Image (cartoon, rainbow, N blue to C red):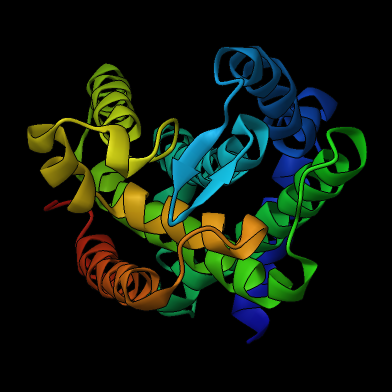
Length: 255
C-alpha cells in the first residue's frame, strides 16, 4: 500500500507543478458544456429524445462532457509514460520494490480522484448555472462510472503508450482513436438518430457504454437492461485493458 501511495503522491506533485494544467483539468469540461452546450441548445430547441424521454441538449450533453473529460485525463496520464521513458525515470521505477500492478493502480487512483473532483465541479455548476435536471439520488452511480471509466481508458491507452516508441506515432494514434471513438458514439447525439451502419459501430464502442451509463447517472436517461449490459461490458473492457497493461509493462523493452 505504501508503494501505491508513493505513486499517487508523485502524480499529485506532477499535477500541481503547473496551475495551467490544473485549471485545464478542473474547469475545461465546464467550459465545453457552456460553450458547445449553449450553442447546440438553440439548434435543438425541441430537445433531444433518448432513452424514452426528451431532454434539453445541455442536459443530454452533460454526460458526453464527463465522458470526454475521463478520456482526456487518461490521455494525459498515459502520455506521461513518454516523458518518463525519455528521461529514464520510467525504467528506474521498474527497479523499485513494487509490482507492476501497484505502479499502475497508484497512477490511476490519483487520476480517478481528479476525475471525481472534475465531475463534481461540472455537474454542480451545470445544475446551478444552466438549471440542469441532475438526478442527485444517482450520485453513487456517477461516482462509480467516473472512476471505472477513467481507469478503463487509462489502462487501454497505457498498453499503446508503452508499445509505441515514437512520440509522433503515439500522438497520431491518439488523434485518430479519439476522433473515431468520439464521433462513433452517443457523446454528441442520441443513438436513435444515427444511421443504421453507424449505430452498429456505436453500440460496440466502449465510449458509448461509458457515456450512456453517465447519462443515466446524471439525468436518469435510459436505464433498464441496456444500461446494465453496457456497464457490465465496460467492466469487461476495463479488466482486459488492465491485464494487457500489466502484461506490457512487465517487459517494456520487448513491447
